[in-house]
Amino acid sequence: MTKLTLTPGSVSLEQLAQIYWNETPIRLDPACKPAVDNAAQRIAEAAAGAQAVYGVNTGFGKLASHKIAPEDTSTLQRNLILSHCCGVGEAVPRRLVRLMMSLKLMSFGRGASGVRWELIDLLQQMLARGVTPVIPAQGSVGASGDLAPLAHMTAVIIGEGEAEVNGAVLPGADALKNAGLEPVSLGPKEGLAFINGTQFSTAYALGGLFQAWRAAQNALVVSAMSTDAIMGSTAPLQPEIHALRGHRGQIDAAAAMREVLAGSEIRESHRDGDTRVQDPYCIRCQPQVTGAALDVMRQAATTLVTEANAATDNPLVLSAPEAIVSGGNFHAEPVGFAADMIALAISEIGAIAQRRIALMVDPALSFDLPPFLTPEPGLNSGLMIAEVTTAALMSENKHLANPCVTDSTPTSANQEDHVSMAAHGARRLKRMVGNLNYILGIELLCAAQGIEFRAPLTTSAPLQRAIDRLRVEIPSLTDDRYLAPELEKARALVESGDILHAVASPMPELS
Image (cartoon, rainbow, N blue to C red; front, top):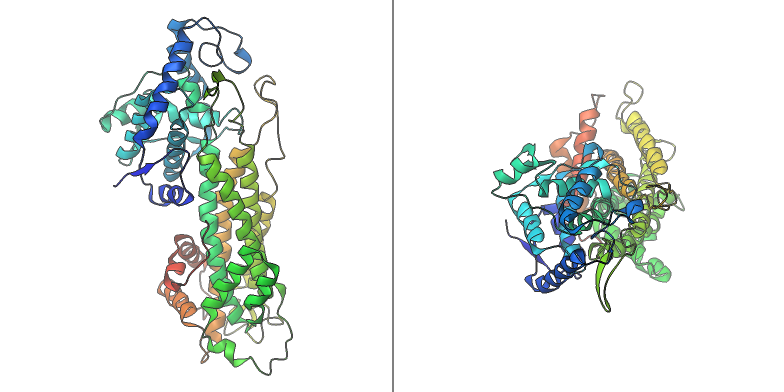
């Protein structure tokens, strides 16, 4: 696989997405090596000196006042990693671990961490040869770095812990050997440089962002299908309405919906003589709601790109003036805020989608669609309980969208007395997007069923392509049948991007 060469400090959102979606291995631009080497030399000199420098020749956290002898600095760093491997819970998915490793490389490449190039090279080789540390997902409070998860990542580098290679989980040393690599001994500050940082939280937040953006694009397509299913109006999509307000996301959402609805016979059939004056908000205000969610996610993306390019460990090796200074860049507050923003966007996209589902299954509101979208209601219940499922998922996401960054608890004997909770704030995004994809998958089923009830009138060509792709996997609903596997298939079509690919219409871009 071709490696992606990155310039530390200038990595783009598109490059981060490539690492996430394709698991592309990276290498740092060699031009950053002199700065890395210079910082490593300064750390080595500080370790040999008489002056106490935090994390270089002292203990950590509340134990910072304990001076460490030069001959013990390597043991100090190894002990730091082993003692901090206290994560619990399920393993982090491989693509997120690889993104996490890549983010750590980007941080080291800024030349302020003081690690030797040898360690950077080993991380790069691990990515290239498919050595993926096994990292428990729980245990970080998002301040003083993502300590536990980053320690599990680093353990493999020193021949400890576990890693997956070629589909097998092996002890860290064996995994490296299997890939033709060897563990390293950590020098002064190097263990601390690895575990102080926000790369776990940032990787999860970026993963949630990329998945949520794909869901939002799907929501624009599926909501357009719902509009046709209930014979809704496209008048609220007129460009001038959205230009008069001026929000980019709203403008983009309306444009995407206009594009996919263009040419619909269903729409043309009721332009004149329709007794309805206005559609419900879930149809009429989709650009305003999902468009606002697009804007919120773009704001979060700006924060996360900045964080991905940042040096976030501690202490940092400064150049002007030359000093090794203890600061607080490991505090993940910016990531926590970004994760909370993404969570709100996910929740709202699902909330308005669920109302469209409720609209379509309700004969009092759906403009002559049969109850619960079944051709023989009474004998059959149709999509009645599928709608109930979406209500449950919508409500679950509302609870999950409550802010995490406003929570804090002191840790480490009150040395770390305010924390960001960014780690689980970012981790919940995966669950929330999963819920959202189920909601959108069920809306897809309802909208397709509704459009088919409008025959012989037809929808637009792009939306018909979406229905055709759906029908390859799931036939139209006639008599009641066992639906659970079909809900899974519908979710998968949304999550994979297959529906977007079938529609083949321009969608808003994250950048």
